[in-house]
Amino acid sequence: MRVRLVTRGGSRDFIKDQLTSQLFLSISPITLLYICPNISSLVLDHGDHKQSGTGGTRIIRSRTVWERIRSWPMDRINRFEEDFKAKDWDEWNQASSWFAAIGLNTLSIVLRIGHWFDGPKYDPILNPFRSSLAVWISFCEWMLFSLSMVNAIYVYLSTKNYHLFEHRLNDRPKSNNVQMQEVGEPVPAWAERYPGKIFYPLLQVIFEHPGFDPNSECVWVITMWCPSSFCLDLFCYYSPAQVLILNYLSGENYFYLLPTAVIIGIQLKVLVKLYQSLIKDRQIIFNEVYNEYTEKFVNPNCFVHKYEVGIQTDVNRAWDKINTNPKSKQKQKSKKEIMDKNI
Image 1 (tube, helix red, strand yellow):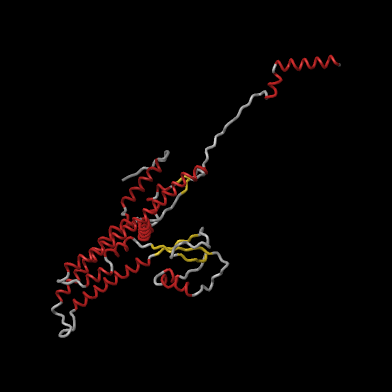
Image 2 (tube, rainbow, N blue to C red):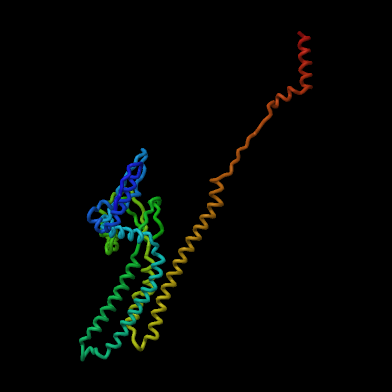
């Protein structure tokens, strides 16, 4: 293939571009990456040139293909972390708690049924050694009971602290979960985790804080109960009481123990749901009363309607009208004439 270079105008540059494109198409991408790893940034990012403010061209060199491949796992992890934090987990927790509770209850019932098949093989007097299946079943039952207990403890101890900076120090809030704390008081790291959250407040009450200064700035801190929706629903449907009831399940009492466990779960869920509705209704009523008070008493006094009224008067004043009266002028003339005659 013969190529003739023409020097007129831009023909030479056009032919060079055609040769370069044919060269890149004839070489495989992997071979090109190993031969010249930096050329991919010039080919792939050819459109990334931006005009600078001075009128010239500014070449922006982006990452090469090898750098993109090497940083791809970390980019995916960072993106997954951002999506994980931005996701609304309340609806997912409420939906998944049903499946978790049904699965755990079903597993407990299946494990209990496994003891029925192991019953004739075990005798505490003649055959005190249990089979390996019975040992594993008992271990799984204890693990499920421990899971239920840990979840119950977590639900009861899930709290969140709020600082009341604008509340007066001499007026204690009417709550049992309020304590006074120094502003900027250092809290050890072990007090932020369990079991430090349990023992640290007790140590503060029993022992005086060594760095406490009575003249320092203090603030009221309220500890609010704040369990997650998933753990709370799991506690309602798979509480330790239900696990103990299912542990005593047998072929003779299943017809009244199973309904008892179901009734306990429904009762707890209904109670929690009603209490949450009570809190929401109270908040709605409080907001409505506050809004009515603001609309009727606060806004009319804060936003008073004012009008710009201009008062226009006559050019002649009131006493000037008396002087312009013809009768008064005649009286004045007569008085002047009398004065002149007397003179």
